[in-house]
Image (cartoon, rainbow, N blue to C red; front, top):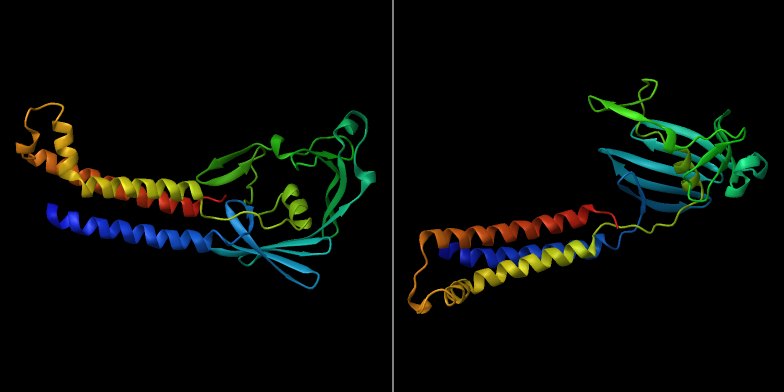
Length: 251
């Protein structure tokens, strides 16, 4: 088993590094807009831009046409929402120092929000001066289902005010999967595994040279053989795990 692993694992490491390097190269070139741990890839036709993704096993998309935003998740349609900037909607008084951007958001004929928001889309203040921000929305989970402070079920796919404004502004595709740091760490651990396999006896005797007089005459015990195999497999699996994790992380 020892000699077989010593021959097979270097080939496995080469395949892992080669396959994931190719995957990182191609996947890393696919840029999209990050939203809820998914990448939405834009496509424009005429005056309509569609951002498409796969979310929770369902097709999802934001369709932006003019100042109208519609979100589809599976067979569920949210909207259409109308996002219209209106400087007169921004509250004054104590909020004037924040330079709020006035906006009115409608879902069909119903006004969802009319007021102002900060440029970072964090704080929303209604026209009457009352805050309406995710910062003040408390939710809790029961059996995996999110509820708000009043006990109402929260739809995790319903776009927030900040999301509607963000997509109405046609954000640029500037995010991608394939974290370069994780690729480098995976390559580094694969290199360590290869060195441990290639120079197993050399490292063993080098370690013994500080403890015994004639390390070249020593023979590895069963425990030493087990430790070597364990370290080879451990570094190989760690390398594989880092490569996979890097493809999941959005940069």
